[in-house]
Length: 383
Image (cartoon, rainbow, N blue to C red; front, side, top):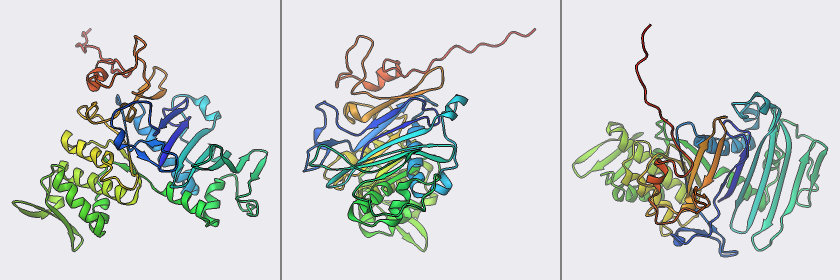
């Protein structure tokens, strides 16, 4: 599961933007946290990013997806130039990623800097959850590569500057530790909810346990659907009034089915669902139920996580999310994105946000630092 992610010099992100899934020192909804029995650290099952249009919410998720592509498909991902878009000088700086994730027994930190289609620096650390210090697995910089005892016998001569060393290692080394890294990185699944895609539904319908969970989720989540199946390559849904193909449903119902199917896959396999514009076309109650699938420990038994961008105000509420699960994006006059959690935000009077505040009202009033500035539009005078 994801512990922390940060990125520097990526699209609208100039200075480092950091998203942490570690619990803050707050008291609400503690039962929803994902805890490992070895160290008891609380990990958030959900993080929702809110902000104005163009504030950089999507860039955070895209950076996570791009890091996964750099490791899995460097030949395609490495040539892409995705540095800070507003300043040509930033092309002279590398794009830097820092990913911290954990399995059942170990925590991993991976750092990567790329520039001009080349790897500039790269480091991998591993520690047992019962230890406080990391072992250096490898350290790569312009001076060369250091291999720790995990890899000291590995021949890395085939690795070029256009390929992350981790990508090569995962293709060549098949020990328990590296199999876990391969699995954890593969568990990050990006979903652009503005692009219709029924593949998650097809996958869920073809998998017995997923289909059963999907049927329960659809029946309980306010969609009106009581059953779903695949027949001859067509997805069929059943309502109390009768059956029809999924493609005959309205856009809102189809989107709910897609999202619930993607959520069910994540919950069944313990994946990290990165869902951009996750509430698109969803009724607030349908969207709230989607969040509850991840925050309910009786449902989320595999440590799945949902990280999404949203404009849905009713779910930006103290009855739904913890303050550390609410993240805000803002963009200054220079086009630079900043990212911060509501749990640590200080208001103008120097006080933290209280858990009994009406979050979305304060947000819309611009009291959390993210405001949309509007001016009256008047008719131009004709000469």
